[in-house]
Length: 444
Image (cartoon, one colour):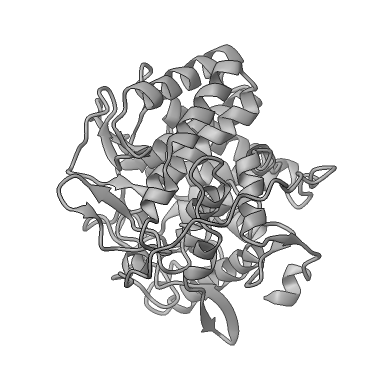
C-alpha cells in the first residue's frame, strides 16, 4: 500500500455488530461477449514506446523477486549494486500480474513464468505468516519474516490477491488454480468485519485491529469487492454502502474523491474493469477520467510557481522526493508540492487520459531520460527545477505503470482478471449493472 494514503487513514467509529445473514447469490456477471475491443486511440509509435516501458518494468519484477519465494522487493536503487531484503506484499501482487503480462508479450517463456508463479503461490500458502489469511505489509523476501513491525494489512493483501487471481485465469494450470483457490478462500473477511461495516487497515499481534478505517473513497474498492465476492467468508452487502463517496469540485467540475493522491483513482481499476458499469452511486471509470483530467488542470494552475508544469510535464502522487517520501497531490493541494514530477502519476492514468498521459511519459523519456530512465523504466520521481533525480525504482509505482499501460493497449489485465467468479460476484453483490455511459468529453 502507498504510505499514509491521505483520507484513507481517517478513523471512523465502529458501527453495531453485523449478522451475516445475507447469503451469496448464485448468479455471476458473465464477462462481456465479445470482450470489449482493444482501444484504437494509440498509434504504432505509441505502442512501440509502451512496449519498451512494459519490458523494462517487467524486468524489475523478474530481477527484484527472490526466485525461491517470489516475494518482490519494495524498491531498488538503480545507481548502486546490491539490494536489501525488504519485501512488499503489494509489490508482489503487481509482480504476479507482471508475470502474466511478461509471458503474454514474450518477455519471459511460459515455462519460466509458470515456475515463478508456482514457487510464489507455494510460499504464500505454506510458509508466509498469515492471520486469518491476511499477510504482513512488509516481509523479508527470502524468509517471509515480518519487518518494520508491520501490520497484517487488509489492502496490501487485497493487492496480492488481485495478482493471484490474474495468474489463475491466465496460466490455466492445475496447481496454480488450486493454490490460488486455497489462498483466496483462506482470507476471512468476516473476521475483519466482525463488528464494523468499515473495514480496518489491518491487525497487529501487539494491539489488535488498527484504529484506522477504510471509510472513504480510495484505493480500497478492490478490497471490498473481493470480500463481497468471497465464496468462503463473504462480507455482507451493507459494507459496500458504508463508506463515504465525497463530492469535490474544481473549476466547476464535480467528481468523487478524497484528500489523497492520484493513485486512489487508479489501483482498484488496475484489475477490476469498471468500464460500462455503475452502481447506484457512480460510474467509477468515468469518475477516474474526470479526476485525472482535473489533476492535470491542477498541476497547470501551479505553473506560475513551478514553470516546468505544462501539458508536456505534469503528474504528482505519493512518491519519493529530495526530502524523503511524501504524500502529495491535488486538488485539493496535498503535501509540500515543490515542482517534483512523478512518472507513475501519468503512467497510472494511461487508460483514462491516453493522449495526455503518453505525451508526458514520452517527454520525460526524451528530455530528461539520462536522469529518469533506468534498466527498470522510470525512477520514482524527479524535480527538473532543482535537478534532483531519484535513485530508486519503487515496486508498486512501476507496477501500476506497467499494468495500466497494458490495459490502455489491450485491456488484457481487465479481461483476464474479470473472468474470475469472485470478481464477477463481488461486482454483482455491490449492485453494478451495465449501462451506456456518455462520451467522456461530455463529462469533462
